[in-house]
Image (cartoon, rainbow, N blue to C red):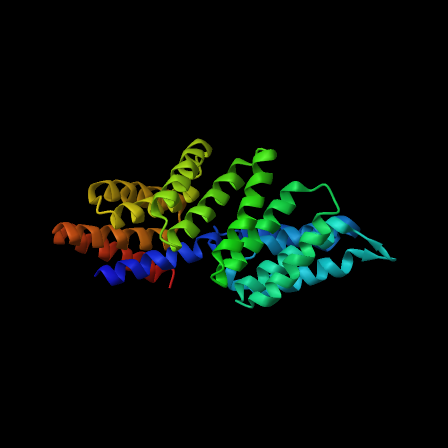
Length: 278
């Protein structure tokens, strides 16, 4: 059962940065605006819509980004911000398709353009995405260089949501190389920020990860506390995938503690949620 638990936890850790809430309504509303927009406004709207595309719509994201990129060049006049956003979206799109070499190429182009303009938020996002891509190559040292660059910018502009995300990324990489105490420090700092921000989706993610660390240390009661709060937050956020994963972790922990009735109850709940999201 330990092997099963580790596998489930690892799936969560590697897919955390890609998981997003359903943005279908926003995507549909942007459709109407895009039809009547022209010039830079249309470029921005296309890039906004591309950024909202879920992981399983990566090709649509790439299509929208290419349209935005083409429109960013008008009579030899380059809309640099639009180009940078388009390249960034293309990089993320290829990341989702697991075409990581292409992802790095486009993210590199995005970085070059973003460095020419005063758009720190965009640059921090690009650095973050480059870091995520290097993680796919298991190059955590290089990944952390970019995550730290992203963190530095996010701190300078007071982007608390971004700061917490960067801390989580650094914590994940520390966890991956066995630096559990360091990972815990990053997680607890991120948890403090996310509690202040009050986003149940993000809270559910970080609470589950801290639960994983405490499980590894044998702190089963503390792990259970974090898991139960994570389960509550993910349920509140409507994160069915997250509920299934955390519920399964709770079930395995109850099994470890010998409470098979509660273990069965959470396994059944997790199965229901997992079936719901296929």
